[in-house]
Length: 113
Length: 112
Image (cartoon, rainbow over all chains, first blue to last red):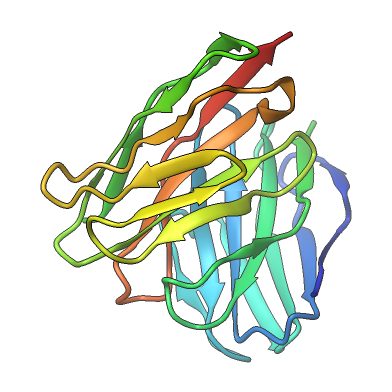
């Protein structure tokens, strides 16, 4: 088995601030994902990466940057936090190929004051 | 584009009653269909997946049949328990671009 670790668990920022979320996986999966989860809404894909140094935009990439520094880690940056923004950011990984199971981390909860 | 529509929540049931969560999908491809479950404070986890039309998936008493003609994948359970309280996501992969499309989720609340 493996595990996905997301840091930090809770992130509080100020309006306009640049904020970085980190994700590590030890499944040895090639593909990693970042999703945003808002209350009452589904999972919206922000970015994904099928290998080291690869980046693919999802449906919600505006306002975010991502970085796949190595196979096991995938970072997401909120380029300018929006006031009153609250959401959970979920990281996932899988074997490459859309029909494989995605394994999710526990999430980072963002609050912007 | 690909999309998934499912029963809007919350769905509130008493323990021991039956559950149906409707799921319909749109895609031009031949998808793999999934049900994921998310418990409070955790990330979603796979309940089961079905890669082929007319086949059934099941796990922990939940089941769903991949109906290609009706483009549906409804989740059912004969007798829910309080521990089934969670958010359930229907999802599809069109197997062409390494991603899964999720529905908006259905929150299930089971009362003792």
